[in-house]
Length: 270
Image (cartoon, rainbow, N blue to C red):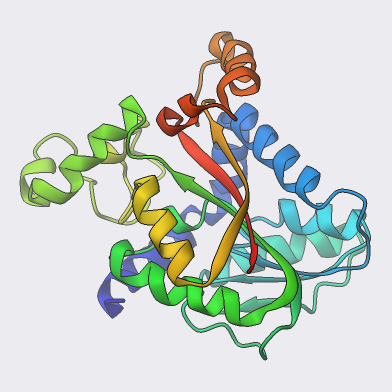
């Protein structure tokens, strides 16, 4: 991964850290509520497992794993995100020595350590994703136990609104910045931006196609044990959220899932 692009991602999330929970988990609460249900349903009836959370952010999943009696370790590339999650969890009386500043490309753990790896809404933020993601998957597989599970979300480029992200690859940023001067720069809380990848005030926000993901999973010597389409999307208006949740129930496991906003996958070793 380009060091400069990685620095932009770090700068972005460091600057966003103080407002991340209220803006993302507040604005996108219906979407994240659904993701949280999928994660914990995927490891239902298990306790005292070793869990690795990638991109721990403000520590919301981290706290839930503790409450469900798991041994959780969290990593993030943003020191400010880690500081905020650590302070918040310490105020609630949790032991937070296992929050680590680290890069998903170079996980600082021995082989086959974790029962569960939680990687929710992380892969979309990888700079140069179609290059980087191969190494990220190898690292995740390396530290996952043979009997372990990898939980991920993947934004789907075939979802109608996500098709805007195509412009991220074919239009120079100098032209895109004619429409929004903040495109490609780190977070600026004073700038309001629409919820489309092409207009995101983020250094990177990438979508993937499922054929590529299936090839990636196969080459990583993993198998899909659960694949669900998620039609509810971030910043979904409240008036639409109940409708989209019903669509999720009806279409999320059908062939129509290939046109969902994103995919939730549970992966295991062969």
